[in-house]
Image 1 (cartoon, each protein chain N blue to C red):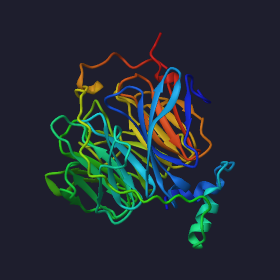
Image 2 (cartoon, rainbow over the protein chains, first blue to last red):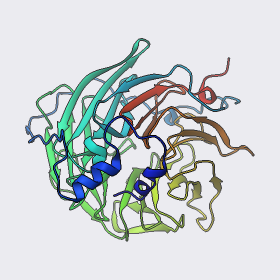
Image 3 (tube, rainbow over the protein chains, first blue to last red):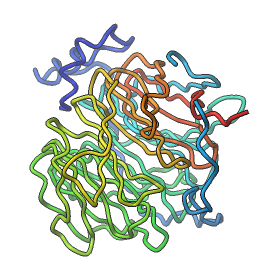
Image 4 (cartoon, chains in turn orange, yellow):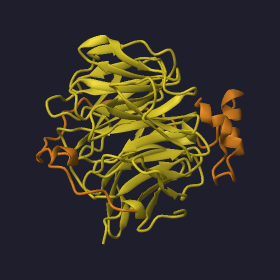
Length: 71
Length: 322
């Protein structure tokens, strides 16, 4: 679990779905989580669709742009 | 300086908590979002490929995976291809033109893979992954076995990011409170920077100074690091009130950065200014985890949060001057 997760309970109004703390409680106590979706996806091993586009240069690979905008 | 940004568009992923967003390097307006059901602690993951234009954001295609997805990176040599990293320790290779599912699945990491990045330098086509198993791995995306495993971190790796300038060089950010610099030609670490007295959740490289990086940490700060002298930070940006979850340097300006946080906000900074905080965008109601800056549309930003929303917008501070 991420370190910031402990702060979740202080972090303001809960979202519409079940709150993080409730999901965590269910998972830790081994109970079923309602609406859980566990697909069984496997790799197709297909080849990628061939690329038709040339790589674009990154902005920093071009000559230096103008000065940053003044806030 | 506060509040909702102008020209903001939103897309909801019902029942999914967004962890990462990345703009396509090929197609302006194409955005990938890695998301998880139930905050990533139970259930599946979803990769959503979105299309944004003046009229709004629509779903181009979505793919499900068996576990939560925590990061996404686009290929730099094929506009259809992306890679995600998952809570089950695997990486997935996807083709946006192939709806049947992932092309490949690479399982080596023994814990959640929180970070995946495709190399940015012209001569290489490699991927680096970073995991809660405390290792980073180097991959040729066409090969199922990793090329190298990098050990050394003493805590969870949260972020692994390629240098945009130095071929074969990547940085990693960790729960062991260090930022480490690696060279793929040697398995041992090159530089260890004890950057914070807290877990470091994110890092990024300056696009215009190959020696400069930024870290974002649980201590709510962003710090800048010059690889030529790592004993102290070159800048320290404070303002966030909870952990900094992701940091990104601007693709267009040497001293501009963006950060998102568990304080629900996205902030924009110019570290060359005496008052570096340019703008705070407060348009989420949950942890804001994903953040990217468009390479095509100057000033355009995407973010995602645990409130099921992906937002694409241009903050005032990045809008082009009149």
